[in-house]
Image (cartoon, rainbow, N blue to C red):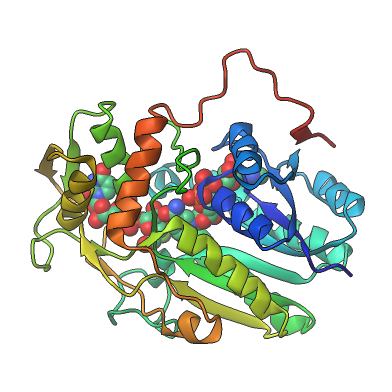
Length: 355
Ligand code: NAD
Ligand code: UFG
């Protein structure tokens, strides 16, 4: 079987699209499935523009098992899956938990069944630092106790356990559970980056929209945390570094390691106000912010101990916070409205395949 073809679910999204570029650069061939609920086929066009290579893209939903099985049948050289597709807004997940459980958990069960029926048993899964809840150890090692504090986080925690159970029951499966810390930045080309629909939930895309004039000011959620400036600490990892971590994890699966967990982070924490200062510097002026009350569920510190990934994957985050801020501003200033599709531009058949 040709291990060089990878099925990427959610490959039109923020982290998925950057990972597809790194896969193509590493000479993998790529088939994407995405239902475009939080992305645009324009991302696929831009992936092709950046790499000069083509990608097969199916507008398929994880919940449509028949369509997923058909994708595997049409592409018998798929040897592994990188599974990004999922809903990811913490606040929204507390309001519509069943939608999150159905989309993320049922969707993953159906994907794993479709993989099994087609004898594809290597998977990389997008997990999250959120599985550590409010961790007792900083920086956080993979051995830290897990248990999430919101429905979104619980979907990640349950899916991790489900995949672990599968690998135990059927030892020919191999899985990399990648716990991402906070992705930041954009592609250095300036034509691909995060494209949040509606009001951004996350710090960096919100700040970028303040800088471009789409939002008046940033609300900083609390300055009474036990940190040097009172704002929470996160581990901001450049999205291209994060994407490269997937290539390293895919290589690791060739060693048939069973189910393995890795923190993908830098090991260096920054407060919210430090990130505001770093991004303001990249933009060249102070960005307005107001301190408001805490956001429910925010914890004080999520900083990775990435030693296991550094050693076992021979991967290390290399891009600085300053470079991430510069690439984010480059992307946002060149694409003030993100990846807007051209009005009236019908999805081109050359990009989207239908089942
Ligand atoms: P994103 O929303 O940009 O990408 C997710 C993609 O999945 C989107 O293109 C969306 O259209 C697609 N999708 C969702 N449900 C689908 C379904 N049922 N069928 C087919 N496609 C579907 O998000 P992202 O930031 O690129 O995150 C990718 C993954 O990484 C997610 O699983 C997310 O939970 C996880 N993660 C993200 C972060 C973060 O801060 N961005 C942190 C930790 C983990
Ligand atoms: N923040 C603000 N104002 C905003 C947005 C965020 O002050 O408008 C603060 C938050 O309170 C937090 C920090 O900026 O202290 C980072 O918040 P984000 O929403 O950007 O990121 P989170 O750490 O809350 O969560 C993100 C993803 C999760 C993932 C987690 C991993 O949304 O899916 O990173 O650490 F699990």
